[in-house]
Length: 146
Image (tube, rainbow, N blue to C red):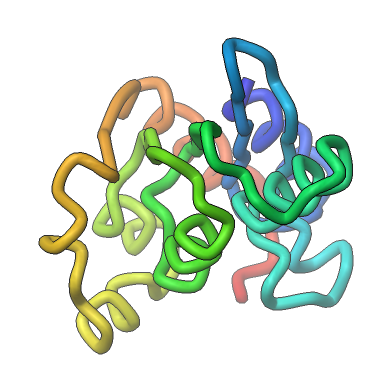
């Protein structure tokens, strides 16, 4: 579902190949994709869009008991947003390094802020190959790099 969200976004020129889905008790409670270009909003990453959607749907800012699935390892802004929202765990496909290979500068901020090593068990990688295929699709599309 996160890949489908990301694909919708890249096919419509909304932004990078980053889609996210938030699940609570086996039900999808939020979803979104990168809308940086569509909204002219540098903070509207897939994870943030999904958090906003889940908060609206659930009527709360506290997403305790929720898990987030996303196509790319979250940047520090999104990682902190997930922590602020009390999301229990993050599952991601592509790594920070993979994000860099398609033109995103997450590694710059990761080097500046570090600290991921303190979140053992919070960030879990899964479905990298499927997400790498999505990144290849994105790279093949004509898109604006930001």
